[in-house]
Length: 82
Image 1 (tube, rainbow, N blue to C red):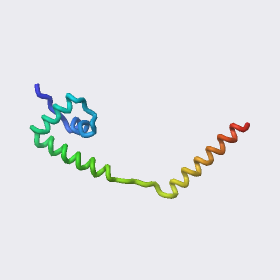
Image 2 (image 1 turned 90 degrees about the horizontal axis):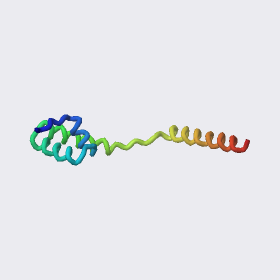
Image 3 (image 1 turned 180 degrees about the vertical axis):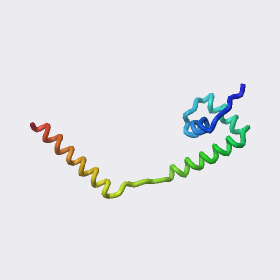
Image 4 (image 1 turned 30 degrees about the horizontal axis):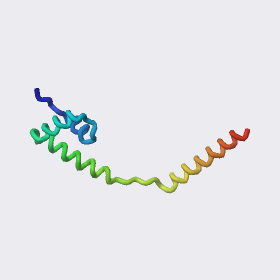
């Protein structure tokens, strides 16, 4: 019996969330189904593009985090002194 694979299965395969047995079956399904293969290739390209995105926090955000951290450190040391 041939299993029908969905786009969700292809995404799971793309992110290595499938078993070895599923991998073999999905590779076979990709070879036989042009639509599934095109979806896989498009998704692979999109994943590679998303991995190139680099986000950095603003200086203001970093300063807020540092300020909060320093306040927590002071509160903890004060609580330990009592």
